[in-house]
Length: 307
Image (cartoon, rainbow, N blue to C red):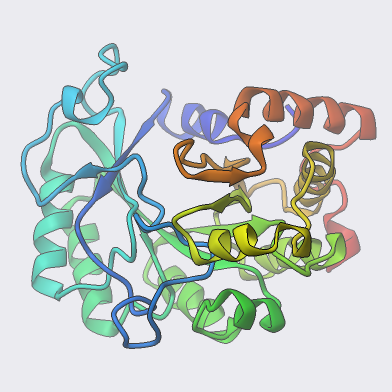
């Protein structure tokens, strides 16, 4: 085993595989509604990264609603993944109703909430704490979109908050007993391999429980994609070989107890401009395994070099 995969983690913790069911709870984002800015992060798609999400407003769901090709998955083996946009950016009352409905649904083993670290005020934290106490047999994971630790990149991608906000949010979540999954992007414009490894090393320092690695892809419904279409030669789009090399180095840097929930992204084929090789996800994962073997790496084998 070259890294701690999500599938392996589920087998160790729950004794079975769990499957994410992406939900769109029809929220927005402070980077879109004007509180911080308009247009979202530079790389964000028109659907708020919820291309494959099911519309959800607290209604009872069935397996047919979630994953029509997973009829063999029994009740209790799904995760309600609140994916699209910023899923704590709403009134506490509505958030309680939505999350409570999902936690009460026998389809779900727990919920995973994708959000921003600047969008968990104290009243929302209290909602999460109340639900955690109400459903002790189910989990509540919080997914934070960090993407990078480098402020120059942060400004370029219009993330809208400084690194200390992320660090403080992780600390508050840990103090209240919540596990954190952090999103980082490989291939952001201007970032070197060492820049990306510095982001991975920072995740060790804050003790995030999980990581989702994303390949930066350019879509025609994102501002980044529109800039790319205007001047593609101004951007360096990672080759498959470059991505695999950087990703394997990140795995070697990450502490071995951090769960790798995702190794690459799923770009919407209708809108994807580049890199087109990302469509063959299985080939990418096979290449990562092969490169880990070639380099003689396992997860965390270089962690001490980045303390």
